[in-house]
Image 1 (cartoon, rainbow, N blue to C red):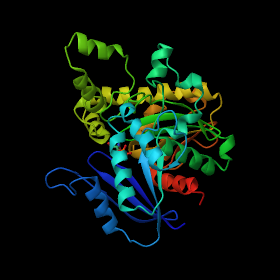
Image 2 (cartoon, protein in one colour):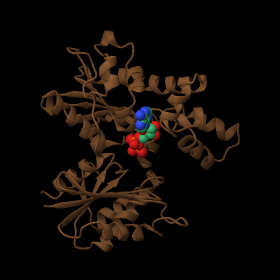
Image 3 (cartoon, rainbow, N blue to C red):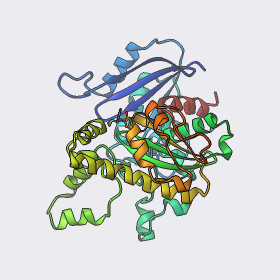
Image 4 (tube, rainbow, N blue to C red):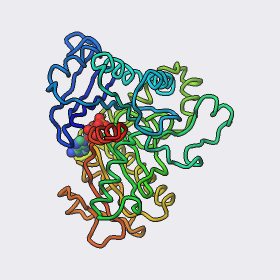
Amino acid sequence: MTRVLVLNSGSSSVKYRLFDGAETAAKGLVERIGEPGGDAADHRGALQRILESIPADGLAAVGHRVVHGGPDFTEPTVVDDAVLARIEALVPLAPLHNPAAVSGIEVARKLLPELPQVAVFDTAFHATIPAAGVTWAIDAELASRWQIRRYGFHGTSHAYVARRTAELLGRPSAETNVITLHLGNGASACAVEGGRSVATSMGMSPQGGLVMGTRSGEIDPTVVFHLHRVAGMPIEEIERSLTREAGLLGLTGENDLRAVLRRRAEGDPVAGLAVDVYTRRIREYVGAYLAVLGRVDAITFTAGVGENSPDVRGESLSGLEALGIAVDPARNAAGDTFISPGGAPVAVCVVPTDEELEIANQSRAALGR
Ligand code: ADP
């Protein structure tokens, strides 16, 4: 098989990348879909633009990123009518994320009817987490009826960087335990035991766990009751506040960590506290996942913040020397692949993620090529 087109469809944008083997033959972004002056009127227009801009020959499959696979989609899946209907049925579980993926798949099937379409789910890698790690202690009947449990996200990224980490260590993936820290606008931690996810920080939606650009991460659910009952906020407003106006943005007015770090360097205590909240939460999860895994070979940072911020890497893992975890300041500042001191019991790594490449590879694998 030669070329695979990977589509990441959001509500107002479509990111695309065309792979020729592992090489990128074309890539780009169609933005402000449906807005005045935007690149396209709808998802169909967006895909038409993309198809006009890429070479037409040799395209063999389309791989779609789908955020939520629910309880049933545990691996990349070739799309047919029944699969598409099942993905649509998951929209209530992921109302902010799945509708765009459904549109993307629908228009790709219409415009490229002869090509196989593969859905690759952010949740699928976490299907191996044991029941005790995905079950919340709430009314079991309610949980089962409404499909309430931890699903976890960023699975393609955690899978990719955990495998890369094992390669870099020169060890078989099946014998390597890694804590992966995907720190981008969204952020999540994952405990990977022998190549399989056994714990992750995001929950039923990409809202749980670590502090993010605009999402709160873990909070006591009483916050929601209180904002509703005492502050009188409607549920939609609470959702918007906790998903779009919280995290670093809520704490400082800036969702970009670079701006927060700049302000901290200028002496702003508000920014200083925000960075401490952000890095302390990471450290709490690292501690939890050390306990889940028992033995950890490596801790790997990835995504925008993880790949680029020595401050966050160093501060997240500070004070853990007694657990065999340390960051070498010079290696960290230089952005080396291995930033732990030579001979440290736990390797600390910086590994660029590549979710699109992983989606292309998984799409090929799903088609048996
Ligand atoms: P997404 O989750 O949207 O794919 P990325 O993984 O690209 O996002 O991460 C984007 C975030 O990375 C930005 O919001 C920014 O805060 C952060 N970032 C990028 N470069 C740096 C840097 N040099 N220092 C600190 N943070 C950075």
